[in-house]
Length: 351
Picture 1 (cartoon, rainbow, N blue to C red):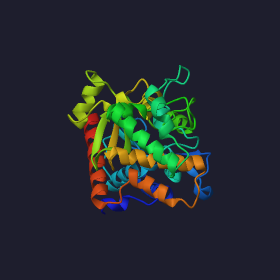
Picture 2 (cartoon, one colour; picture 1 turned 30 degrees about the horizontal axis):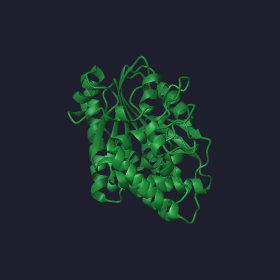
Picture 3 (cartoon, rainbow, N blue to C red; picture 1 turned 135 degrees about the vertical axis):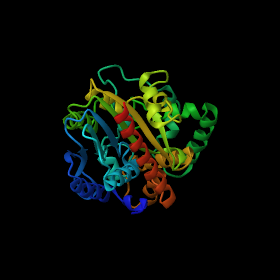
Picture 4 (tube, one colour; picture 1 turned 90 degrees about the vertical axis):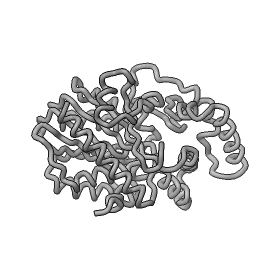
């Protein structure tokens, strides 16, 4: 079976394919139904599947769809792994979280049903929410109502000027999450959202005895095209960072830890405590950063306009920014995803 065959055209097809493979796997499947509606009233759900024993002390957790429309690659990797029927030792489990942000996956949005960026939501909401000064500096040209016309042209020119003035790293920090504007971009929310609560509820139910876990959250849209960059949550010179490099190699970086707060793995670490959880963002590049950001701005403007159904070009371009219709890219994604999974299982067994 070719890698491309694991990529399905929409959320419903991805979920259906995953559920077929899950049923054949004999694993334990739990489904969390999202109360928000999908396109055409489609029921939305996040699937939690465990392969291996309930009392496993070692576990790999593979997550797809944290950023909605980025879920195609993660779903393909999960389905390819299930199709491969990888044998597990008696103390090892694999848990797959399919379509964590089912709403964004189904509606081709990066955010959830209330415009929350899920990968910014896993912070302590009882504490003071951080203020992102960098985002405040570019918000007026980033989150717009206009898709075209003089207003958009002026904003694009100002965005280009600010990008040059601030530099790439500061722009990355600016889009790393904000907690002040519910209708802005990269909004982290003020309370734990539905997907946040579901992850915290279902992981401990499936892994009640786990002591050491590898948590891999699969994303697209950043980095070299087709290559899965391993970005560790943990800071350098810590034992957890050293273990991540031992498992996944010297190209593991701590870049993800520096850019944004509130990543989903924080919820996994808290939900599975006192287990040790080594967290990784596996990020597959698609387009250059400027192209991805342009697609994000257009889609956000479309949402603010009410997502006029006739404007399919914006959604088509948005999907292409996170899932390339290219057999070589798809093959690279699946191969790398399976490699990272295999390395994690080996590392867990040897630890």
